[in-house]
Length: 468
Image (cartoon, rainbow, N blue to C red; front, side):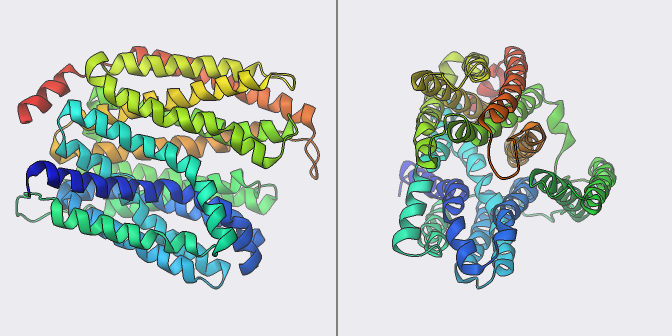
């Protein structure tokens, strides 16, 4: 088997794994009414999704560093097996508590599926080819956003909600087989240092922080006892983040190498990614709310109204992959930022009388901006460092993106007002969403500024060409 055939098999495996990780969020949300109806646990509704995301966020940088130490293939297979075990157990869960624990296990494996594929693509392809392949890989998230609710609904209606977990097994096994038989890595045999103190302190710090954010987001913090718990969790999180920083400075193999942030490309890309994902989660969560609460349309209509965003996102990813080696990182980033600013300004001026065609145009521009910007930033981060730091670099960027989404939905959730407790008042909702979209437009201005200050990738491109 020649090198091109081997590389194609590895790439297919990575695409399959990325699709499984990407579709997991949207497909499960579709099945939640059926799940809570059968397992009788409506009060634990939010934890089915929250615990999965929490586990994924915590393990993302850990998998990135371990893949630098022990190889991409080994850590990918371990993560995929954990993900599949969690999927299988989730499918046989008999209570909500069981499902929550099994979803946590699934999330512990998903951290590998969301990070390592991008790292392997960075290893396998030259800069020009890498940009195109990562553009196609980034488009998978948009495709999953379109197909997830539809596919999930079909499985729930005609088979069972358990099928949405079982479907991961055959595809995951195929991905593991293709990668294990096709990817070859030459690792230097030596004793490896695992930063266990760093992993433990980071896990405690992030768990406490994300748990506090979840309590705030789910409006469980209205009582005095809950408020006290939130404050306690945040205090513990700060203490352990300080301990983590001290440990990482002394560790010979830190989980998050602080030297990464001395690299200007990575530093600016991470700032840009954080801001983009704060905006991204607001757009995805609050535009359907505008459709249903202000326009008074049904949920199905709001799903259809978001299709322009889901189409434009993969389109932007593909365009970024094809253009970045020709136009440059700064050009693509600025173009994406300008589309984002234009759409954000449009959203901030919407009223109940805004024509649907303008809403479609704004959502299309938003999707295009996310595809252009996030894909180009992924390519930039994976190109800015050598092999031994690439896993950590990509993982840190993915971690910062998820952190941005977590903080964004929490903070902007505090600004959201729907009116009375039992029904949505359109005028009140529209006023609060105007405030939210105004601040989104302000953040978009900062995205433009950061994009204009993005350094050129010429040096990284030259290094990649020399390596190949």
